Each structure stands twice: as structure tokens, then as C-alpha cells.
Image (tube, rainbow, N blue to C red; front, side, top):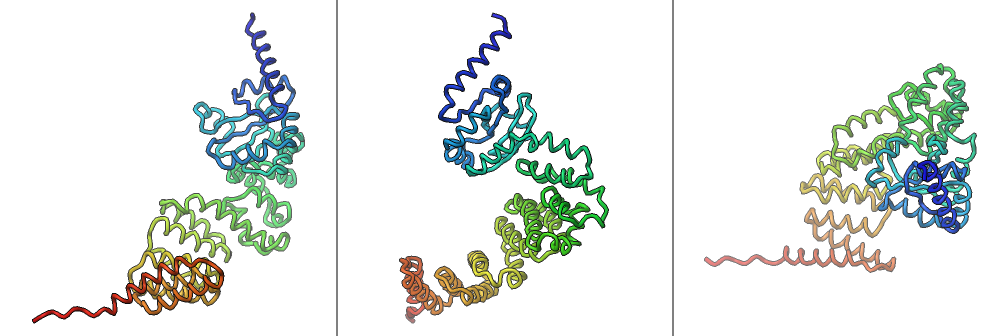
Length: 408
């Protein structure tokens, strides 16, 4: 039998196998690119690739809750060749490099020749999943069409905005910066402030040091007027989160300091407050309690004074990692203020523990009894208060026990 005829027979049998098997379920074709492209040509359907990892919670949730839904099964079987790739399987490197896959779950829609038509990522609910799968079938929503439309006239903001919105669904926003930057380079300052440019900025710009980002920072009130102050602040916050979150809990202090300085270029109160939180998280992870206490002492009144939860978190860390009286006294003043704002069981117990560490046993007992009464009122078991009170009573007894006189 001639090789090309044998391949044709194999493709037909594979197509027949999947047609029979996939009527009541979605079958992952994991036989590789060449095979799924053959199926795509035979079945006249684009390929829908799911890149996943077996231990990925989001991937497994989609497999269990979305891909087993009858409506999803019927739609995907009717419109796609469904393929899968284990992100961590040996031999997957070429695929990941070819299509620049960095995370999972990633969903790729490819034509029969391997051209990328659409991409989206993350855990999606059924309705959103079907909506994205339908959009990917619309030629005017596909990446090649949107890119070609934009490249006809790179000064056309509307076409760029449409292209960026679809790109953002499946790509790291940093990868969109060069495209947006290329557009903004051609826009004069007096033409920058409009709704289309704002949408391009929000979807495609994360580089704080770029000319366009600096322009928005300086003219944030003008952009707030065409959108809203909240949306401007949200954009600033999202940028800083994307910049700092990946490194804030690492021990890479040098990189954190460098990127924090970049984030600080955004002059907005909401960013100052966010940096305060990230500083605390970073120094906590690094167990640098000297810097942690310094940051807390200098900024708690400005950024957390009306937020009991944040105050309690700070006090807990300072109390656990301090032995000096000034630090403990300061944390005591903070937890007292927190309890004045919002009395709570955990807040009262924390105040009692600070008193205990200061060796003020009478006040510690008083606060623990108050916490126990609070738990009784709420119908809780109050075991923590009972345990703390027992410890305090032992300490009190030990402190009042007379010392034995030595014989002459």
C-alpha cells in the first residue's frame, strides 16, 4: 500500500473513531499537531486546543463543570476539533514555544494550517466559555482579521482598540505594550485625551515609564472627566498589582526595591496605600521585622487607621516578633484603637495577648474575660479565651507566690 494512501486511510479511521466516540462527551485528541490538523482538514472545522496541567485546579474545574455540560458538548463537537496538551508532558516544549504558551489553562483556536485565530485563558464559567468559543468562529473577531484591519492604518484608534481587546483575552498585557506604544508615538499631546485613547491605554499599556503612561499620570483629572475617577484609579492599581505582585512575596529585595520605585512614579493616594500594604507583605516574607515595624509605625495612621482588619494583622506580627517595650507599647495603642473602632472577639484577645507580653497580667485577664463574654454573647465556644485565661491565672498565681526565705 502506498504511503500517502495509507495516511489517508488512517486519517479517515481516526475521524470515524472520534465521530463515534464524541457524541455524548468531549474527547481530548492528544495525538499531536499533525494529526489534529489532518482531522481539521477532513472535518472542515478549526482546532480548539486546551493546554492544561493535571494538578491545575482551574483546569480540572473546567473539565468537570464546563466540558461535561450537554450544551457545551453539543456546541464544541459540532464546531471544533477538540485537542488537548498536558503543559508539563515531556515533548510539549515545541508546542509551547511555537504558540508562546506560558500559563494554563490556555485555549487556542487554530485553523487547519496552524494559524492562530483566537486565544483566551483562565477558568471560565459555561456561559463565558461558549461566548468565547462562538466569538472565535466569527472571522471579524479573529486575530488575523483584526490585525490586518489595524495595520491598514496604524493611526486608526478604533481598529487598534478592537485588536487589543481581543489580544488581551489570552496574552500577558506586557506583550501589548509595544503595539500600543507604536500607536501613541504618532499621537500629539493635544490629541491624547479622548475615550478611544483611554480604552487603548487601559487595554494595552502597563509600562509606567512610557510617555503615554506618564501623560495619563499628569493628566489623570482630564481622563477621569471622560471616564471616571474610579476607573483611572483602578487602572493605576491594576498596573501596580501586575508589576509587584509576582515579586512582593519573594526574597528578591533588590528587584522589589527597583520595581517599587517605578510604581511610586504613579502619583495617586490609592497607590501610596497599596505600596504600604506591599511593603508590609514583602518585609513579612523576608522576616525583616525591623523594617516591617518602621513602615508600620510611619504609615499606619495614614493608610490603615480606619481599617481594623489591617491594624489587627499588623499588631499580631509586631507582637509576635518583638521583645522590646516600645514596640509592644506602640502595638498596644494600635489594637486599642482598633477595638474602639470595631470591637471583636479576635481584637479583644489580641489586646489581651499584648498585655500578657508586656507582663501586665491583671489587664490581660480583664481583656480575656471581656473576650470570653463577647463569645458567649455571640454563642461561640470561646475556647481560645478559656485557654488564654487559664495561662494568665497560672502566671498570676506564680507572680503572687511568696519567695522562700533562706535559712541563716
